[in-house]
Amino acid sequence: MFSLWLTCCLPWGTILLVLGEPAGGSQLSPENTVVWGPGLRADVVLPARYFYIQSVDAEGKRFTVSPGENAFQVKITAPEEQFTRVGVQTLDRKDGSFIVRYRMYASYKSLKIEVQTKDKHVAKSPYILKGPVYHENCDCPQEDGSAWLEEMSCPQVIPQIQRDLAQFPAVDPDKIAKEIPQRFGQRQSLCHYTIKDNKVYIKTHGEHVGFRIFMDAILLSLTRKVKMPDVEFFVNLGDWPLEKKKSSQNIHPIFSWCGSTDSKDIVMPTYDLTDSVLETMGRVSLDMMSVQANTGPPWEEKNITAIWRGRDSRKERLELVKISRKFPEIIDAAFTNFFFFQHDESLYGPIVKHISFFDFFKYKYQINIDGTVAAYRLPYLLAGNSVVLKQDSIYYEHFYNELEPWKHYIPFKNDLSDLLEKLQWAKDHDEEAKNIAKAGQEFARNNLMGDHIFCYYFKLFQDYATRQVNEPKIREGMEKVEQPSDDLFPCNCHRKKVKEEL
Ligand SMILES: *[C@@H]1O[C@H](CO)[C@@H](O)[C@H](O)[C@H]1NC(C)=O
Image (tube, rainbow, N blue to C red; front, top):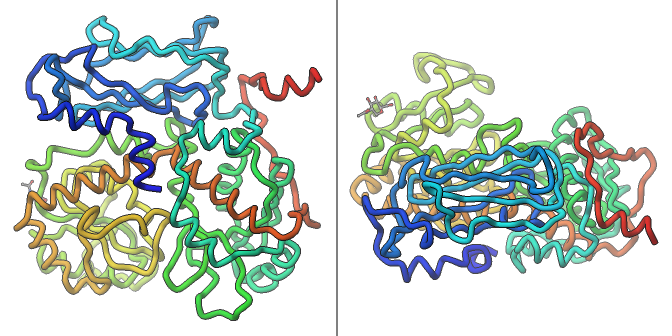
């Protein structure tokens, strides 16, 4: 998947090589500047659409530092309408490139996107998106799944999906509908979903099922965009993967937000990442785009004390704070909350106030250490321009297996015994550490944006559906999960209209 992304989604990757050395203090060229991305295409419906601007000077050299936060003005309008209900933000990545993102609150026949610098149009601006251009809440699924995959530029193959599903060559919906609740239903927080005729049905098992809202939300969002295959599956809402490798021959497919090397759960993007995609420019402020505009000072100016904040959810975290208290000039690690262990202040110090996530990037070295399972902050940490030191762990999110130690992050042992040594290595090899930070950032930019997350979910359920040996059914006790009805600006789905006229 990951190399495919590079070729399919960054058509200008090749241009960069031609453009050559970075520019400094030179004149921004509206003609040479490059504008690209999914947000320039009408049919890529995302909660927050986005595209990129790469500033280039008159000699064709691309900027590697910001040409100024307000270098570009972006205006988005619906030509046929009096008002365009759209929120627009231009995010300066401080490396010469920008993300422009916009969230539409209504659908339009077409959209006009103007990108200007000092009253001059940039690249091929104005961009006209011939519609209909649907907003996130518009229920208008593309009937043809493979056409949708193409519109979204989804990768052909996602290795993690292949690995996970290889363990389940055949799935019998009738059988799992009976057996999974028997094995896991009482003790765990489980959701039994059936998608039939692109409608979502659910039955919950266990007491604590509040987190179903994230799964409901992504499934509803997907079914508004594309016709999902008929599919029946179980989602584990708890932290820990359920289907242990050691268990009997008769293993069951369970979808989880966190995978582990000692289980057979099928991993999905975490609820945290999923929610941040759905709520970008809405309820959440930390997402894969906002983080790119808040990566702190340039590498050379970052504080060289390593940073960590978090809860006491694992004993290695206690160890980390102990090391920090012994070597405060090397590591600044402290708890923002004590819950799981006895709080011995003489060992672990006082509880400290939260620091804003973006403030982490004032520091050059980021420590990533498991909580109850994988620490779901890793996507955001990678997207900054600090280097991540990651604890070896059995737990992983959907993308970890595509990351390479020493390329995208610096690994350290699960028991932290070599953490100080690895930090010293990073200080002694500043150029290498900087490159690792860059590669991690590049990975996050190319693999963890909203469109990638939608691709992952759809391809996962599409592939899983082909393994079903029986029809998925709406089971007894299931209820329909309704689309949100509170939309102020309902849309006219052209695909549905055609049907009515027939
Ligand atoms: C770097 O961070 C540490 C720990 O937060 C702090 O004590 C120190 O003063 C900072 N150094 C500089 C140069 O700001």
